[in-house]
Amino acid sequence: MSELKITDVKAILTAPDGINLVVVKIETNEPGLYGLGCATFTQRYLSVRSAVEDYMKPFLIGKDPQRIEDIWQTAMVSSYWRNGPVLNNAISGVDMALWDIKGKMAGMPVYQLLGGKCREAAAVYRHADGRDAREVEDNVRRYMEQGYRYIRCQMGGYGGRNHIIHAPENAQPGAYYDPDTYARSVPALFEHIRTAIGFEIEVLHDIHERVSPIEAVRMAKALEPYRLFFLEDALPPEQIEWFRTIRAQCAVPIAMGELFVHPNEWTGLIAEKLIDFIRCHISAIGGITPARKLAALCESFGVRTAWHGPGDVSPVGHAANVHLDLAVPNFGIQEWNGFSDRMKEVFPGCPEIRNGYVYVNDKPGLGVDLNEELAAKFPCGTELPKWTLARITDGTSVRP
Ligand code: GCO
Ligand code: MG
Image (cartoon, rainbow, N blue to C red):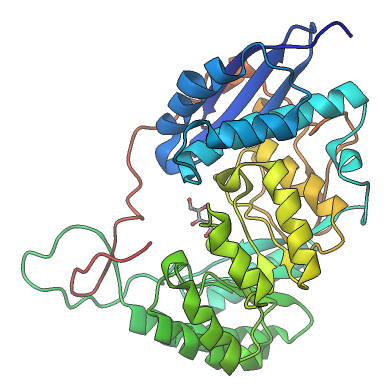
C-alpha cells in the first residue's frame, strides 16, 4: 500500500436516544478505509468536538494511521497540560478509530489484534430500579426471565429520591436528596431482594459517590451479608484514600473507576489491592491503548475489569469495551445499557445481547459503522444536565 496518510478527522455528534454521543471519524488516502472511535463525554460534548476538530485534526492530517502508540503518546503530551476528561475523550475517539483502521487493514476484529478470545462472549449486568423494594424485585425478575444473571439494584436511582427534605428558607434549586435516608434504605433493599429471590443471581449496587466517606464504610459493612458481586463508587475520586478503611473493615468486593481520568487515580488502588474491579469509562482515559495496559496492570494484582457501559457511551465505545472484554484473562463483568432499534439503525453492527451475554460480530476492526445521514436527524441537545446539581437536605451542593 503506498504511503498511508490520515486525510480527515471529524467529530460526529448525534443523540438517537436523546443522550448526546460523540464519535470521531478518521479518513485516509486509501479509498474506503476509515475508522470510528467513541469520544463521548455527554455533559461537555461540544468541548470534545472542539478538541477533536480544532486540535486533533491539524495534529493528525498527513500522519500514518498505523502508528497508534506514537500518535497516542504524542497527542497526549501535545497539550502539555494533560489527563483531563475533555482531551482524553478526544484522544480516545482518535485512538479507537486507529484500532478500527488497523483491524480493517489486517482483516481481523480488534479482539484478535489484542491477543484473541479468552471467552466467546462477555457476561453483562443490567440496571433494575424501582420506587420501592417490591418494584425493584419485579424488575430484577423481569431481567432474570430475559436470561441475565448479574443485576444492579437501585431504589430511586443514585442517592434515592422523593425524600422528605428539610431545606432552609430560600434554598437554591437542585436535585435534592437525603444521604441518611438513602444509606439506610440500601441494606433494607438487599434484605428484601435476597429474601424474595435468594442467592442464585449476582447483585450489584452503585453508591455513585452520594454519601460521606464514613457512611460509605458503614454501608459497605451493612451490605456484607447480601454477597454483592460488587459495590460501586462508594467514594468520590477525591477521597480514594478511604478505600483502605473499607478494605480493612469488610469483604464487600469494591468497584471504582468510571470517573477516573489520571493514572495516579488507579495505580495506587490497584497496587495496594484496595479494589476488586476497575470500571473506567474507556474514552475518559484515552481509549483502547491505555485500557489494554490498565487491564494488564490489573491482572498482576488480581483486579478484574468491569468497564463503564451506560447510555452515554456510543455503540462504537460499547464495541471497544467488548473487544477488550473478550481478549483479557482478568475480565470481570460488562455493564450493559442496551440499544434501541433507532440506535441500531444509526450504528449498524452494534454488539448483540443473547441470554445475558454480549457478542461482537467478526467484521474487521470494531465492527460498528455509522450512518451519518441518519445520525444528523438526531441532533444533540443543548440543555445542561439537571441531575448533576445534586444537593443534600440543607441545600449544600454535593458530588452527583
Ligand atoms: C453507571 C454510571 C452512570 C453515570 C453516567 C454519567 O454506573 O453506569 O454511574 O449511570 O451516572 O454515565 O453520565
Ligand atoms: Mg456508576
